Image (cartoon, rainbow, N blue to C red; front, side):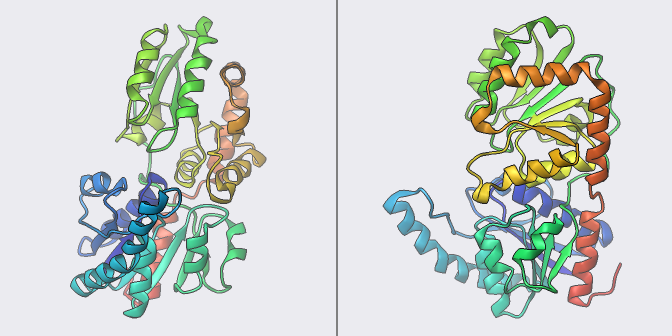
Length: 358
């Protein structure tokens, strides 16, 4: 089976696509997978590192780019559509899966003109405008939440959950200290970085009890690393973590945003978390994602506008002292998780294309 996975830009879009690609290859090593993305996205580094081929199209976003940026973006739409048609002619896919991001739209539209079977993956509870529109033309919509079905045509929606990149966490030697794992997504989060430093200044009495693993993103790395040098904590500070499965395996408590891929990973692996939704996400979907976990007892939430070092320190101190609460949060997260999401999407994809199941 020949499959194109279209989209990316951020880890939240790309990583579920990588999980599905890996499952296609696990199911049948003869399956051929091609990723299509943009030169600005995380896929430029992550897709080749995962061992898959990648082609690029020139589409760019229009929002907040000024007059010149808008003109470039408008030019990129027809150019990307034509480029997508060329990719389809050369690769001859049986199936195209859109995972979100700017590259998803042109490729899926081109695939429909070639009568190729198509599907999209909607990772969030509330879909963005592009996926809501694409949902009207694709053959299947794979959703992470039951509540997403109302935004798409009846009969096309299959609730699968959101795929994660690892079938299980690795066996690791447990830390003797309580491990805080802090990150703001694949590109970092300045607000979380700053409030983490303020938090640690107020947790100095816990320096012998805590260890911190902090993914800062590239932009804030030097500043945050310098701030940690003035603190008494044992800490590992890095701009980006390739082995996120190792990081999750060691974590006792996670402090992070609530993007769809992060939510899927926290729930599949049963990790308690303090969630800080990104406040500018389309339709405030990160807050909706976080509220879903909070309602089920799997996480705590602090809104970005209410976040400060003192509040974060109080939450960490309370959860550190209440191990029963941490265990209950972990168990609740695990109950929500959908570890078979990638398998279900691949199975549905075979059924959609009429291929024999392998």
